[in-house]
Length: 73
Picture 1 (cartoon, rainbow, N blue to C red):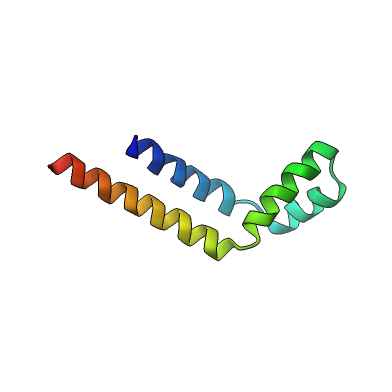
Picture 2: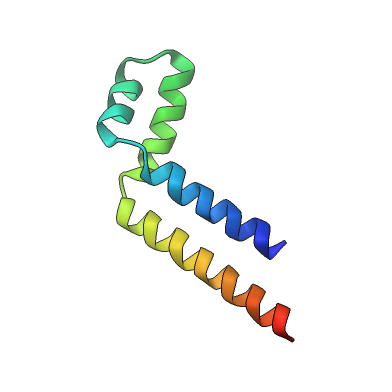
């Protein structure tokens, strides 16, 4: 379970940090209605990229430390 959580945090880090703010803003302004909705939701999270990155990295590191502690005991 911990490994799945750590994997999810790694995937989110890679996925969210690889998105361009400009591309998301353009998609939110002039995409299809479904794409506009999705882009605006993602854009609201990705705009605070430092906070998102720190949260994901700390969560991933904590999960790995908990895993190692459980594995060795």
